[in-house]
Amino acid sequence: MTVATILGAAALPIGKIQSTADADLHNLEHELLLEMVLQATEQAGVEKKDIGSIVMPLMREYTKQRYFAIFMANALGIECSGSMIEARGYGLAGGLALDLGFNEILLGRAKVALVMGANFESAIPAPVHASRSMRSTGDVDFHMPGGFIPISWYAMDAVRYMHEHGATRAEIAHVAVKNRHHASLNPLSQFRKPITVEDVLAARPIVDPLGLLEVPGRSDGVVCLVVASEDVAKATGRPYARVRGRGFQHDGSLQIDDRGGDMTAFVSAQKASATAYGQAGIQARDIDFAEVYAPCTIVEVLVSEALGFFARGQGARGAVQGETTLGGRIPISTSGSLMSRGHPPNVTGLYNALEVFDQLTGRAGERQVKDAALGLCTSELGNYNAAMVHVLEGVQ
Image (cartoon, rainbow, N blue to C red; front, side, top):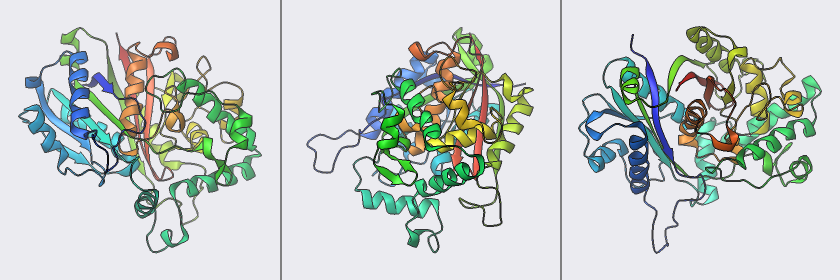
């Protein structure tokens, strides 16, 4: 049976990379991405002739070059006999591209595939970006006139969670403090200065009750993953991460279920993870660490419960007690999270997978999870009304 793996990875530190229109010199997406391809393929021990497919998250509309997968094939001089795919899925795009890359291997279309992308948005005027975000994450006839930005939905989740479970703002704030500590150990992170709970609570409000340190900043990122069949991975003699399970679920709603669903249950993440665990032949307690797609503190709390790491209402308290910190029972967001590592949305799912790969192959440095064998990464689509979950296992 064919098994898919991640065999190599490279990424730029997340931050403000995009050039302004009037800059004398411009950072070009394809040049930076080409460098990441060279680094990732060298780490993987594969050559250009081995690559059969290219899969990318669809580049932001702010990118001048279109049909970027074909453009990159030309720049690399690669003749693809498998597929060339650009996947659209907003926040889900990175996880979806990774999933499609694995499919190229599982379907026998390629022995090696590149899953890569660049997300440039930091130099775009805030009103333009906000308008685009509202149009992408809500109903243009109902949500957009009310000014619902993505953080608005998560803020409502936080209010509901505190009401239902008696959690406090300070308890939820511990998630941001923990993630900033993890980010301080990660050279790819955008924000690395340590913070305290008091800092989080005193920060400028964004959408009540969430403040500046509980939400992601504007970020650019460039990343490349090399995925390959396990036969290829074994032949290189290098450490790799193999796919043990995969799950996807969409609940049929747009942001918050207007048919009376439970807004803090994250049912799609529950069902997607159950499918992934079933394929892997494991349970939630077998996972050693998780890299979750969580743009806000409350989202990490809710998805940690949906994935089965905590009972309903206990996720925030678990963070307070250190269970999700490095060295704790179930380290979560060891990279620093979307809030501190950074959140270039269309490639965030790939950065999450890179962190899992680094942990499972012993490359995580100061933030290494001891004896990490099974890791999990997620991607989401708007308030977790859709979730993609991958369970990976390290092979040294």
